[in-house]
Image (cartoon, rainbow, N blue to C red; front, side, top):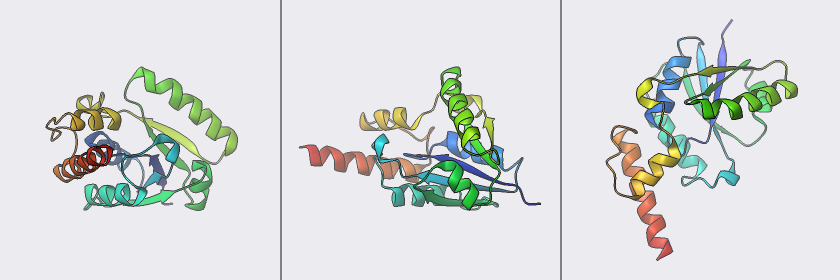
Length: 166
C-alpha cells in the first residue's frame, strides 16, 4: 500500500525549514504532496502559481514529491488525493496550540485523515516565512534561510511592491 501524505501550507515563500520537513516526511511515507493553499486571507506576497513554481524548483530531484495547490478544506483535498496522512510542522511550543486545535478540528471533519507533527532541524526551528519577508525587505542576506533562487524572487517581489507603493 502506498502511503501518501499531504503537506499543506501557504509557503510564502518556501524556506529551508519547509524543505527539511518534506525530507523528513519522505522517511515515513512513500509520497508527499506539497499542497499550496490559496488562502487570500493571509495576504500572500507571491501568487499561487509563483509559490507552486518555487516549490517545484526547490523539490526538484526529490523522489516521491509532487507539488499542487488547493482551494478547499484540507481534509476534502486529502480525500480527493486519497491521502490518509497530513503533515504539519511544529517549530516552537507556540505553534503547537494552534496546530493541535487544527488537528482536532480536522479529525472531527474527517476521521480518515491523521495528522502527523514533525519538528524541523534545530537550525530551522525559528524560521518563519513572515520573518524571512521582513528581513528581506530590510536587505538581509537570506541564503541561510532559503535557496538562492527563492531569495532572488523574494527580493524582486519586494522591490516591485516597494515601487508600487511609491
